[in-house]
Image (cartoon, rainbow, N blue to C red; front, side, top):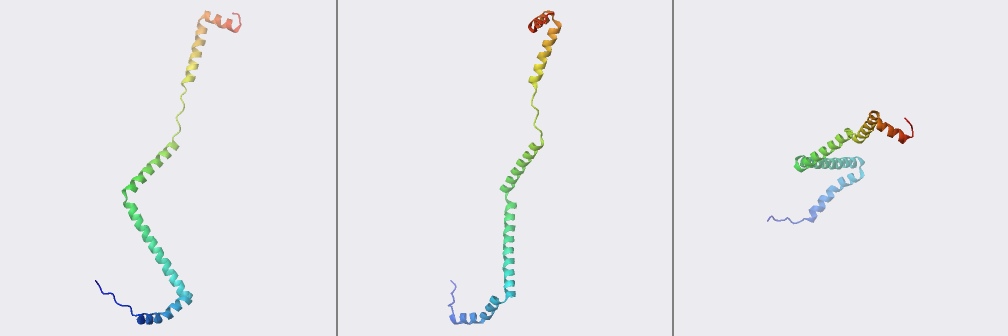
Length: 127
């Protein structure tokens, strides 16, 4: 175990007395305060940038994140594809069938004289 040196209070008091003019200058001088403020701001920005870089490196190497991003992109592609494709037209089979039945009935009445007589009797007309 290393030996812990004892604190010499007189030596500490002498060092504090020697540093006192410098501390007073820092408190009073605006230029020194601006320099200190710039130093701390720049160091904070540097630390923040380094943390961001570290997060980016972790995120870039994460396979789970990569898979999640691919899933999101695939889902977004599906949304955009569905927005550009028009909906399919509704089937119109019922209309065609009705017109076919009416046409067949009209053709039958036109060809058969007994059917013409029945239709004329229903409508109240004489032939």
